[in-house]
Amino acid sequence: MDIICRERTCVYNKGFSCSKRKILIGEKINCTDYEKKTDLKDIDDTSQRIFGKEPPKYHAHRESKKGCIHCQADCLFRNEQTCEANGITVNKLNGKPLCVTYFKE
Ligand code: SF4
Ligand code: SF4
Image 1 (cartoon, helix red, strand yellow):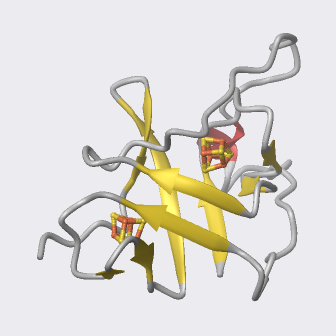
Image 2 (spheres, helix red, strand yellow):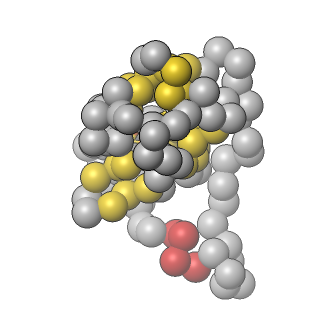
């Protein structure tokens, strides 16, 4: 289970990968574990220069059997309170970190 995340202002975001192994995605597909960093000076949206001469550094894929995503959304990948997707992508949309792997049940 890998969690790719574009919300780089979160304390758990390490090179576009979530280092928190247990998260809760809420009813409105929002990541409820988002915690804003106090020091934001080194953060820029490096995904804008992904095809440039100096592409951003990404964290290696974090496959983890210990990872666990609890979820409250009405999604096809949810079984009871747990996400059963192989991994998810969280994108920053309208200023909020949202699970874009969501597929309405
Ligand atoms: S917003 Fe959520 S998924 Fe993204 S790094 Fe933070 S805790 Fe992880
Ligand atoms: S893929 Fe679906 S079940 Fe998994 S966290 Fe996202 S919304 Fe929840």
